[in-house]
Length: 273
Ligand code: SF4
Ligand code: FES
Image (cartoon, rainbow, N blue to C red):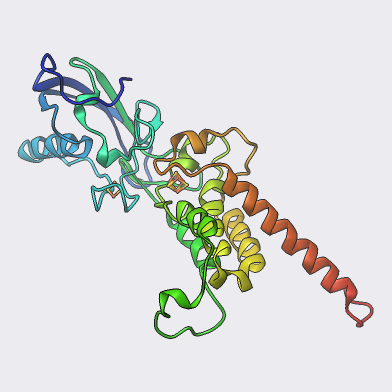
């Protein structure tokens, strides 16, 4: 692993690399496949290096490596690859699509795998099924009233520190690196980020408790594991989401369960549970 740098004068313009890439067809076991790349430009991004490999495979009449990507600007969260054992590769705060080949050494062997997590089954090669995240968002990303068009921005004052914290949490791009890096396969950082950004703002307050409970339930149903405070998720999140969001999720979840408990026991109807 090396640090992000600008190309130095003595840095070669191209790299000779050996790639170990995970290949897997649907419903079959996978295995690593090795490829030599003799001249990868150091100015290329990691995905452009994968494009070079695929162009060569296509020219040779072979099947290209399937991998997810979309924006290539670090904002969509699609580029899910584990590079040398690290989700999104060796640079902190950088998505795979923003990682450049100048950060690797000439002659290096690079191992590329899909996210490894029970709740993210491999679809093909480096692509995994992240629909579990969609189910979590569908469970909690709602409000109970029709709001019409966007209101005037200053009609609901939001204190600056609250807006800042909500917007920091909203940076989550749903990539899944937190799940892939956690030995429990936990999605608590992702769920905590969504709950924090929705629950902190005034518009999200009326649903806050129900949202936290519904998203945690959806997370459990999708097969994600529990958080035991390893902190790998925070270390590998390309957007700098911190464990604070998990603390907020736990607070909102517990407060709602306590509220629901007292609501159920405080009602005049007797005999209910
Ligand atoms: S919390 Fe970070 S690592 Fe997890 S999905 Fe969001 S951006 Fe990706
Ligand atoms: S391709 Fe969109 S974040 Fe990497």
